[in-house]
Image 1 (tube, one colour):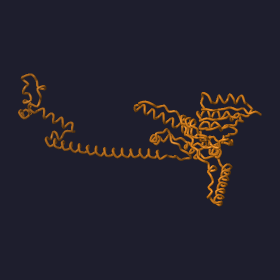
Image 2: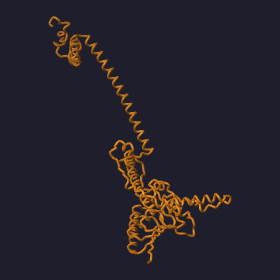
Image 3: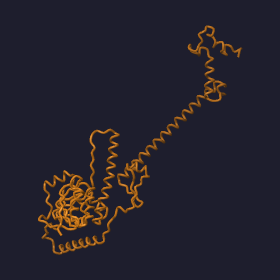
Length: 380
């Protein structure tokens, strides 16, 4: 049966090399074996996952990696029946990246909005990274820790290492035994924001040391055999780690902790919450600020109490002095009544009233004197 060949030489995006492009050719080759030749720096993860599902539905697709392939291109291949890679090719897994467009002069409110937008993008990127990691885990049988570490390294690996990880099935021998990194390739990956490949000389290509004894060489051979045996054991005994079945709960009710960590919720896995050094510093700083605020509030309260007590003491002293002036003042019901008694006494003192309060009538000029108990005590 003839094999239908489809080529994908370029970026994966919704405008050209996408799920519709692949579906068109897969539908034409329904029931026939298909070979998808891929040489791509990656692109849209969503399109790559959809294309992977289309290949899985077809059921008989072989992906052939040519030259350098990265990111979404690696995920795309996992829906194939078999994955092959040329000996001089390179393979890269890395964390996803999202477009960020922030430019200009921003005020405080606009900066707060930009920060929230970036925080939302970060959460989205973390979710996509976990989804990608699950794809690599399902394919390789490696642990989540190993896969995340590989993605964080952003390290290009040759075909032999990609096969060791279980990401490909077959290495296609070629004229070039190692990848050829040209200026065109370097410029292309730099423009795409991908790391430039760095070649490490495999141990098999390192010249033998003629001064090394036969016994040492035999020991090295034993070590190599042991490594191969361990690798074979790993293939048969390795268990795939399913991060989707982990007991993960997003705890939104820890509102104060979430506010300190500047997140919507903290992640609880199997009853435990993992905090980074940055998280601990944020919590420590918040507690420090709270303690400082508490100490300041206590000091302010103590100062206010002292001032209040001083004012009360001063008021008591003044009231005692006033009470000593007259029994009528002393016997007044309260301080307000005492003030009124004093006003009444002051009103009886000659000349105490201002001109505005005196009567214009000449007959009333000496009214105060007439009513003054000092001058008219006989009429009291």
